[in-house]
Length: 308
Picture (cartoon, rainbow, N blue to C red):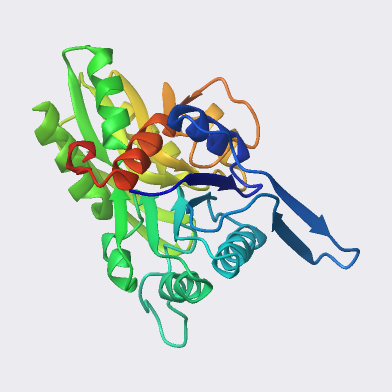
């Protein structure tokens, strides 16, 4: 049994961390970040962590300072004799760089894994990795949670009686198929071709969506180009409505404008990444209680299988 638990947060996901700590039943630990005039910064843990189980909550979306801030906090806890250090990374940045897809490029996700381990992390907790195999980049345990435990009750609450799951591309077919089996509904998908990154050249629908309420599912929404085009394409093929559920709301570039101008009825995301601005078409579901429950199970040596 641990002698104590401390939960700290970086600046990237402070609101989510506060809610996780509240659900867990402890106060969020005090971290002061000193910023120097040249842009360098230094986080300081303002309370003892000696002999404690320490959780650091920080998503690692750009800018890269979010990742480096997490690394510095982990190193600080290691040097302050923490009993164990668990990095809670709701959104694992650089996960799209999980392999060499062309010559002379880095495998960024592997490099991030090694940096976290070198900093002194004992365990990783994350959600809906862009590629499942990233778990294998770590020599430390990885608790890979799924937002489906949050999204499934929401989808069931729609209760239209005419739902069909869909994937915006072939890569998301496995995820969409898992939802369709769980809900016992049909499956459709889009086949897309790209000429360059973040730019779709061609997209076609595979499956019958006429008269259906389509639920698109993906692990993240970045520029929203794929989702917007897929939603419009499903509507052109006779769909009654199109909603999208995406775990991580990266939402870069013209994403908000594309979502508002698209045929999407609604985009449902989690708070793994804070929204840059409010949007009437975006609904945010919190993962705070899920993380707090898993963290509690971890500390008390209980199974977390029920959360998958």
